[in-house]
Length: 173
Ligand SMILES: [Fe+2]
Image 1 (spheres, rainbow, N blue to C red):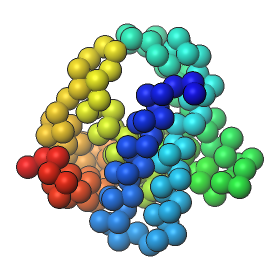
Image 2 (image 1 turned 180 degrees about the vertical axis):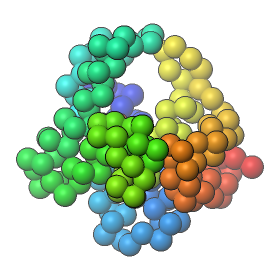
Image 3 (image 1 turned 135 degrees about the horizontal axis):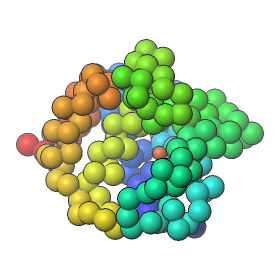
Image 4 (image 1 turned 90 degrees about the vertical axis):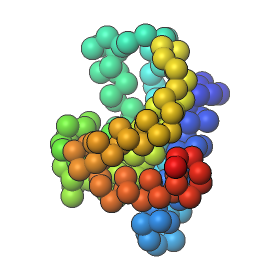
């Protein structure tokens, strides 16, 4: 209700995430949890003031600091519910394998595979959607960006599996 963009984005991310996890051979229960975690991954954004959430320009450092709270806020919300076991996935979806992500700066093997999968699908979907301040990039362009950053920001095996999914769906050639 607060942000239709985030709702639609999360729904697309969940579809990509399930397909990527299936391609990687994750077991059924983990894929099911990943599906729910990806729908809820940005739930913490509910705490971000609407004028920041929908600002059609670059954020100030102060505003970006507010945005950076959303993985932790989301995790905290989930820890009070029956979905508590998904909290770590939500909390880690902006962590990056080189340790430059947030909120903790976790490195490669410290990051859950599920969070790495959401990280890749999330970035791809964000890049291939129009934003208030820029037009959408093509799927090819976004995929190339992910490949450039594989092993640096994104998990190489996840990027590879995701590329297979896009190839099979005819989204890239
Ligand atoms: Fe996020």
